[in-house]
Image (tube, rainbow, N blue to C red):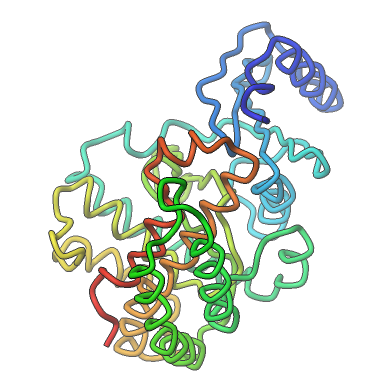
Length: 336
């Protein structure tokens, strides 16, 4: 298991030697101070101090190994969106980047972050539009396509997969299976409508929240991290995780799963502004509604990928997130 290895002295020494070698070409030297803030089934990070500022080493597991190549691609095509990438070992899923600053959620309480969020999501949307032409390169990096064209088939595949797993191991009951099968025609219709809106497919971070934004003091200097859940598909799918997160942290997440508080809607509208060059706002709002509903399939698939190779206990500790997100299709607010 990757997680067990990532916390060993041998791995720490191997990672440190690799980072030192990569930084030497830039005239940077490690000072000896380091820390491993977290190690999870899908990735781990080591923080190193250097003679030219703090850097972060990241290692990804088999289901998110594409992140190293992806952040390098993004850094090249949209400079400033991610912390500067200093080196990548794509085969091993290793990368080292400059520090991007403190996490946004550490800088102020949620009720003070609305202006920052409005600016951040607008920048991110503009980046998605710039990256829309990079599809072949993104997919070649190993990013999965979870688009309006592929979601119906992926839903059918994942439903069948979980139907064959015992319930106490994260599988579906017969009733849940029937419910998801019954949803498939609606999902096909929603995906067809979403795909016809006219917004191009692009990179979709799928986990854009205040713990994955580094705040350098301004919207312009903000950097987005942790791209391991990224897929290729409708860019509007980002609004599932992002709106849920900002609403929840601010105490504005409705009991019925709705995220329609005025502050949250302003963030959504700021995100949609760059897309109005393609289609009118009312259609985009409908697109967000569709993408949030069909995005439950993408979230389930992201967890399946992230937990690749992890023991059953990891799935259980997280309350079987693959199943949980798939079942959101049945219980979340309707897209019709």
